[in-house]
Length: 353
Ligand code: UDP
Image 1 (spheres, protein in one colour):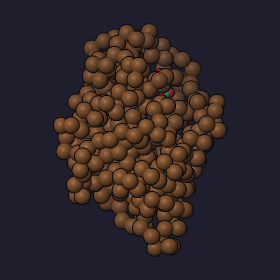
Image 2: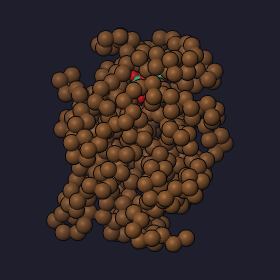
Image 3: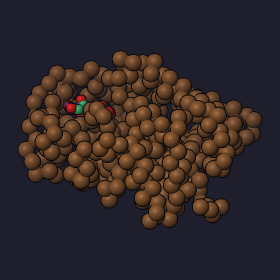
Image 4: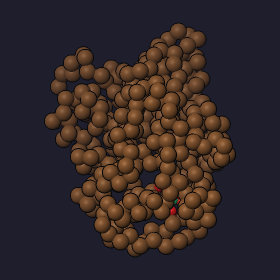
């Protein structure tokens, strides 16, 4: 296959995961030449097959490479050989509870892996880097800092958040060094709030094992795969006592990556929160899932989950202002409906893949 020189060449790490696969899909649709890298430790081969199939009908191209970001030499070769211009880095472990139990796994994979990837990016002279960061880097901001803006002090409360913050620090230093040396490089960290929903066309979706997130769990109950939702506490200082989160649709989230990819200039380091700017409580999410599925979703009350701040939502005005980004999915029911469609069509996710 010959790739026209005008096609943007993008490497997506974690391409077989939830957000990475959606990013690949949008990049392919927008005419990019996408190389998806994943070691398949948590991603799904089924996702890469869906991307290959989509690419055969889209203006862009997709190539899957099974490999690890920890393999610095292999990554340098890949970046050089495919003449990659932009790296979007999604490959990471993302379970807060697991990070508390196995912190070194998180520091090794999320921070160590990112460091090796950044070394490869430097060695291959790739000029643009987009990093998948998280609102977990803010920890538990005081009430007067909510909605959370980018200048809110970052004080993560678990190893997952700390491992992501370490990568932010690496990027700050790396951009500074490139600026000093006058070499072309720019990076953006996008701090995601709660990512939800699936590709509206149902080609890729969310398949976490185990699943810990609220919306897919509610939908699994609706589908009869779980008995009940356990609400983690209703004694929080919120109107209905349950925690409030900012649920941004995965397609809107990945659109932010595409927007920033074209906006970055050499020597720049950008930080953006990506969320809707308001939140819904656990009870409101449950009601939305009941409306969308038309099913009774039994729920029981459980104790608080350690480390859950009562309220988290973004002040996402910076990204709106700088990149003209605004979410298309502002109705929670529409977001839930895309996730429900995927789950109904793929009752066991990507299956054994
Ligand atoms: N939650 C819940 N029951 C569940 C899963 C989640 O009550 O089975 C709550 C959780 O305590 C939090 C909200 O739903 O207040 C969102 O949790 P999720 O794990 O989806 O995302 P997080 O905000 O932890 O990144």
